Length: 250
Image (cartoon, rainbow, N blue to C red; front, top):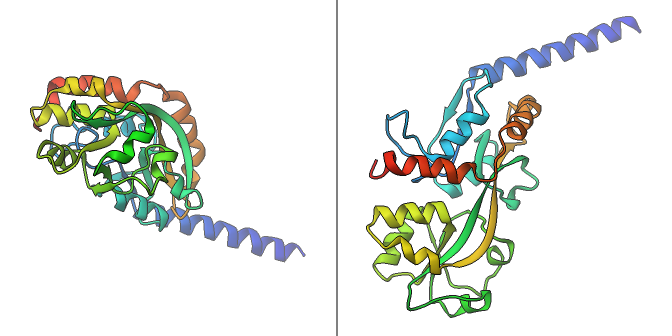
């Protein structure tokens, strides 16, 4: 009986060591929305992006090496689902209910539908009259909107693409976070005051998503404590304001 117990303990120890070794050889991979202002692809340490700053603060006490990877939004969701990505800081995505552990919330962002001044939206039902609404592929903004197949949605990869199409008149509207839209309007020399007339769709929370297939599942308790410690509803917005003066056109 004792020999069986020793064998079991030995096997468990070997399993733990092998998992630890595997994790050590494979750096923790993490991602955030890979477009401005959430991530800037440059070498300026002071200007890495709003979501990058938030992720770095939360993981500052993690001793394992973290490899930040650049992925399209839809690819982030796919990679979390299939364990090709360990961790991501994005809007909470209910599509991943069975594939990730949600760690959060981290912060909040206002979600709006931006339209031209001659096409104001005052209530949700009026969204149906729009011929096209630019939507980030793979993103979730508000349950009713996300599941509304009666709306004419045009999927894009970034706010830059969405606002460019909006500027050229190829879409009637853009749905997104107030921070993201504000930044791109400034970048493309459009009047940011039109945001004051945008339709308020709601608020969305930023959450850490840890893939259930990740070899770093053992970090879940530590990450949960870090998120709880650093949570601020306006963290993303306040970080964005600090970036405004230093990070445009980067």
